[in-house]
Image 1 (cartoon, helix red, strand yellow):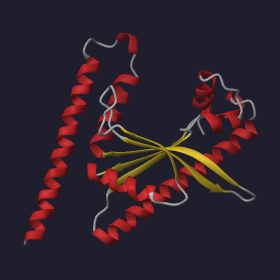
Image 2 (cartoon, rainbow, N blue to C red; image 1 turned 180 degrees about the horizontal axis):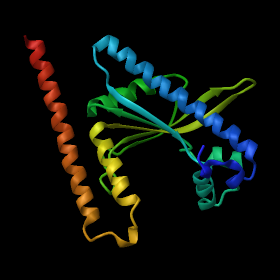
Image 3 (spheres, helix red, strand yellow; image 1 turned 180 degrees about the vertical axis):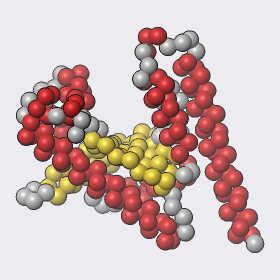
Image 4 (cartoon, one colour; image 1 turned 135 degrees about the horizontal axis):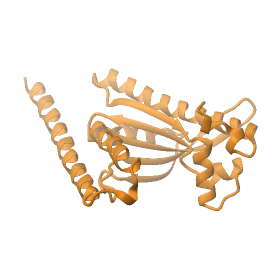
Length: 216
């Protein structure tokens, strides 16, 4: 655990935060496992894996507190669970654009997953060019004496989208925003468009190759 994640330093009730973190870590493990199972089954049925890799994280105490303060909420576990929907985050990186929607649809059919909100930044990119499919969900976590329903944010994107998002974060979000060179935002959006074109082209080539194999 990093220093910034020590609950005794930044969270009023250390024990409650440890329990909160364990709850959300359990949620991301459960969500990631769901996607791993879907990917494994897809491999058996269709002889390919739609998912390239899965990442997960739980927000640090500092990040949770920053959001609570920004929203004028008390620094309590109850406030964190009710007002911060992305404490638990799972990122699913797929090979192709079609895979993103296919994987999302398979996941959404699961009966114990409640879909709270869908944001499609692939069909409608964000202002900076960001592309990804976001699902805000609620899932049950079964503890020893009770069941807790936990909110989480899932991002499903292609390798190309993930490439752009990772570098955009490194280039812009870690930089001094007040001192960015002129035109950087426009260039970033242009790069996102170029990468999206390549993404679509790679998917088209893959489809054509598969169709030619079937024709043999």
